[in-house]
Each structure stands twice: as C-alpha cells, then as structure tokens.
Length: 441
Image (tube, rainbow, N blue to C red):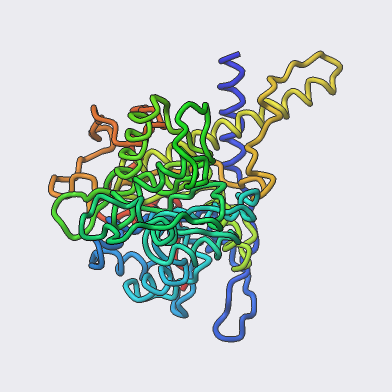
C-alpha cells in the first residue's frame, strides 16, 4: 500500500509539472484590451504576512517597498495574484488595505486582504444568533461586516452588569446595581484578538461560559460542555518596534484556557480556531488567490502558493500544514483515478474510504487548484532578527519549546521552512527565480 501511495504521488507530481500553455489576457494600457503572451501568465500566487514581514508596528520595513515594485507593472497592476494574510483582527479589511497601499506605494484592494476573522463569513449558522465578541477596535462593526446580526460587546455587558468587573478598584461601582431583566441571552462567544483590559475580558468571558450565556444565573461548572467558542489569531507573540516579540492573542487564550480549567477541572473547547496556522485560513486564502486571478483574466490554474512569514509557529507551520493537505489530497485523487481505471478493466478495486472525502469547506470555496504551498521564512520579525541568516534551510532550528496553540501538536517537519531569506525583497526574488518568471515589459 505504501508503494502504491508513492507511485500515485509521483504520477500526480509529474502531471502537475506538465501544465499546458495558456493564453494570457493582460490589461493593455488604458484601453483594457487583451493581449496574448503565455510567457508572462503566472501559475503561482503569493501569501504575505504583514507584521514582521512588511512592517514592525507602524514602521515599514525598507525591503517591503522594493519587493512590491517588482510585483506591479508600469500601470500599477499586479503581475501575480497577491493576498495579505494577517492574524490581526482589530480593524476592517478596507482600513488595512488603505494602510498597506500607503506604506507599499501600490494600490491594494480590500479583496486582497485577509484578516484572521475573515473565514467567519462561512460560519453562517451563527450569523443570526446572539454572540459576544471580544477584542479591540470596532468589534461590533467587524462582526456585522462578517454577517453577524445580533452582537454584544464586553463593554455592553460591563455597563449592564457593573458588579461583575471588580479587579480595578477605581472602576468599581459606587452604588448597588439593580438586576438586569432584558439583557439578551448569549448563544456563542467570538474572540477576535487580544483586548485592552485582559482582566475584564477574562472575567466576563468566564462568567458567560459558566452561566450558559445568562449572567443572572449562578455558576454551573458541572456541565460537560459550554457555549460555542470561536477564536481568531493564535499568535503567542508578534513583532512590533520593540527588540523582543510582544504578547499576542495566543497568550490571552493561554490565560483563558488555564483559568477555565482551574475553575472547572475541564478543558476549554473551541468550536473553531481561525487564523494562521489553521488549514481553513489557507483554504480561504487560496480561494482569494483564485478569485483575483480570475478577475485579472489569467486562465492558467494557480498551482503553487508561496507563503512568506516571520513566525515559525504560525506562518511556517500553517503553510506546511496546508501543503501537507494539498499533497495528501492529490494522492487521494490519483488513487481514486487509478481505482476507476482498474474498475473499468473488470478487476475488483478497493478504494480507501477517505479517498471520497474532501474537506468540508470545499463545498463553500470550491476545490483548490493549488498543489503545493511553499513556506519562506524572513529574518525581519519574530524569527531571530539579530542572528546571521543560515546558508540553507537544513540549518533551521528545531524548537524544543512549542509556542503554537494547545490544540496543534508539535511536528518538527511543520516548522521547517522551505527557504530562509533575509527579508521580503529577497523572498520575491527567490520566488521569481524558482518559477522562472519574467516580468512583462
């Protein structure tokens, strides 16, 4: 069986490399007419992390502007599909697109930006439920933009139940509070990102979970389950202007998980973990790449994705995890095709059950065309910014302390980047070299 699997993978890889020539529909000056030149049609897409790759805090990384001058033509049009995949979740996509346009000097649309919470658009079964959202920035607007119609914020709870927020002595109510009668029952909790006042959010989220969404109820810790909990952004740390990484939302999740377990003796369970390194995030990013290529009139399928990041535990782990999924998916498809051929000859064929089972999200996003997702690590962010760049990827560190989320197991292969480069400009140059891609004149 292992030999068959190897043959299927090898045959699939060979087929992928024999991509037929396609016709390029490129914009020609201001007239928008199409010109055919398959030489310049991209068969790959780029996924850029932002913090630590393009910026540090609010400060642009110098190599970023150089890199993006290589990615647009003389009319400012992108020559390859590009999506920005960030674990940030404290603003709307349009605001992030405007910021990127300013720092990179090229026009970026909101359709090229994927926030950590973007895949929540697909969780439609929660869109009409009353949900509590935690984070900072315009959390109510973000939730409504994603499709949620009945949203409650931490501040709304605190205003209605002032006696619940007691850590800060200066914010404690001066007078007794009357019971709240008409406050809606919470049906799910969504964590967008790290809040400003951790103690307040930790306290009130635990209150919601232990009262089953009704804060007038007493604690009930004997239940075997709690309200659905959806979390975005699992970054333990991220890189800003400081010399060392700063706490991220993943650190907040560690606090929440441990408080809940300390009180109840049970593990906190997530309905979904969204943002890098989750597979769903890369599914959604690949879908956006395909959509962008279609809008630009590029007809050749996007076979290769390149994910550029600075964090081994999110960017590299996630890209490699998605690459593993794509490789295994191709092997299953090849096995299924061979089984059909064998069946056509009248020879009994047994196909493993998982061959017919694709990822559930493919019904929402359509099947991916990509067959690989290659990881590239830059040294301008979380990853050892002050050390020399290793000469090759085989010298990459094997972390002994796993900084990834509790629900993701440590696998050394998943934190091993395909390439290590000094910065994002070097990453783009490497990709063009790998793809033998020449910029259209």
